[in-house]
Image 1 (cartoon, helix red, strand yellow):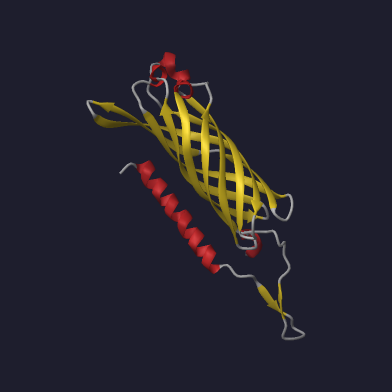
Image 2: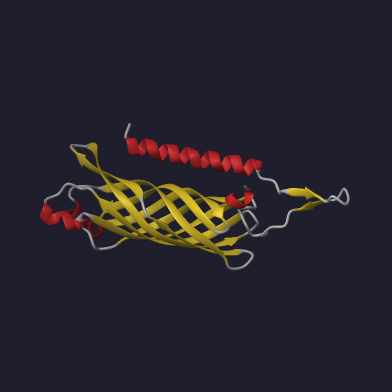
Length: 232
């Protein structure tokens, strides 16, 4: 089994297990008033959360800086992930997803019909609380792995060829909470995939960096009421 695919499955499983654990185990912390029997809720920022679990659909818009960008067109894609608030609104996130591209000009890409890009990545960011229900998030992905699964047909047989690379990305989102635990969001990201595609040196610059503008919409579940460090 491909090692990158195996790692991607492991990260997906970890995200799901974290979501199940915290969604079932979170309760408000309480302390007992020593002067009576009344139980009171410990004071803390009522807008603070421990983690999120999200799913989003997005449209990848390729730039024209590479042959891939000039020869393909993005179609509906998705990402699934979690964020954990380490201290106050500073978070670390982990995501898996798939980006779909249709070939529109084989003069740039070769005899490919389409490409499906599997990826997983980590992000580091900050979520600002603008109002009780409105949040703005900014993050950076300094590293991540991508696998381009390029498909073409030879004598009525589907053939898949793979290329591997690294991802760097800036991401932003604005989230509106419908309830305390459920929000909907719009996000935008600029993404650069640095590829390891074997081509003649004269063509390397046309394949090395593949860039995208991603625009998406999704749903987010907020869990817990205190960040990791404050809970220790």
